[in-house]
Image (cartoon, rainbow, N blue to C red; front, side, top):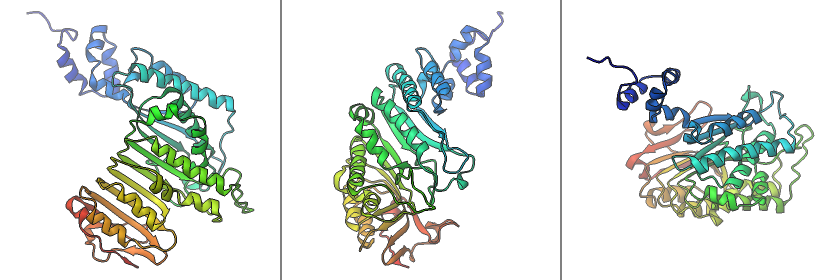
Length: 398
């Protein structure tokens, strides 16, 4: 009887063995012989390369270009998180030379081109942008230069390659976004990015299913000690809200939208209010024909804007509002009625922090099992699932 060798085992059996091993053991197994390496390069092994977290530095991006060359396993990449660090000194970021930023964009674009042209899964990526710091709690009111740099590197690379994007998370999903948080994009940076051309971005975002975006005022040069105000005119602010709508309209197949506003303690000039009420512009200009999931946090809008937005998306399945401030006179009664009468597919509902000039909406008739409450939040909200999400919501001003 002939002895059985590892090389002689059927590929199906080697695949079963690989599925039981951790990553280091799989690597060791693949180094035994070329035959075993070939037989063990299966879906289980490739899953270790489907997600990658990459710092925006020349060295890491050069490696990214290498591992996305023909035949390399980096071509199986499907989820890419790109990040940078905020300097440990509060409010300070490393000074970057424009030529360095251009180099980073070019390197990232090379890797994206490799995935676009050679990826076996069709080249569609999910991209997430993050900023990391050693002590986030101590970085309150930091400027937004770090997010600016990372955003422009990525948008430039997408614009030059037209790499198709499955989802794009711009500093939103990974953070709690409490008051004075430190990770959001300066509003005017969207205008700057789109001013460089939208043809490539339109190609990239045409099939985007999910967009997450955390925004705030552009505070570069703002001095909290002397209370120097934002150097922003109303026309500039108006252009910023137009640019946000232009960005959203580049994504005609959106199924999920996540918007966050990070407030700063600044005087409410006409320009500042124009940016704060960006949601009204979205409701007026943007169309979301197949939107199914919507997450809103710390949003300010008029009652008219809120109703106009939600009347356009009757196919909504999931809705989370964690902080919404009605600007001017207005009430939430019509919104609560709309959710129970015009959203036949709604399956998950989360509401908290609904504030108008009259006060904060409370839910006195909601059973305790549906309460949405945290120690840091003064008022509880509601969380419902299934048919219960479509049951009329009873709210009153506390």
